Image 1: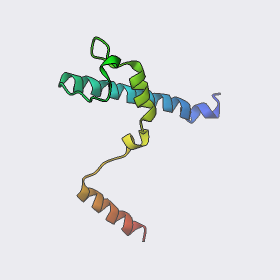
Image 2 (image 1 turned 90 degrees about the vertical axis):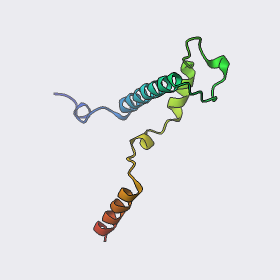
Image 3 (image 1 turned 180 degrees about the vertical axis):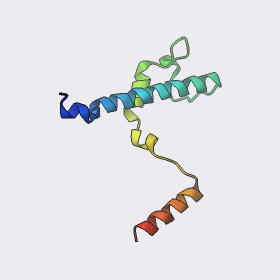
Length: 94
């Protein structure tokens, strides 16, 4: 029989690693989009760029460290929708 911790799903550390990998994939995709469009952020010096236009791995690791996963997961609604959600929440919390 499997231990209870295995049945409950992955632990926080493995979820965190998965979140970081997912975030790195997203950042890599965004970097490819911006580099194809000619966009230059200017935040990285020319010395840190490789010959093929890719940034150094340390750059992506630093971005991953500062990434706020909770903010990425936060749902964003239009102002009117958010107003209606707040009204509904207020109604049910009376």
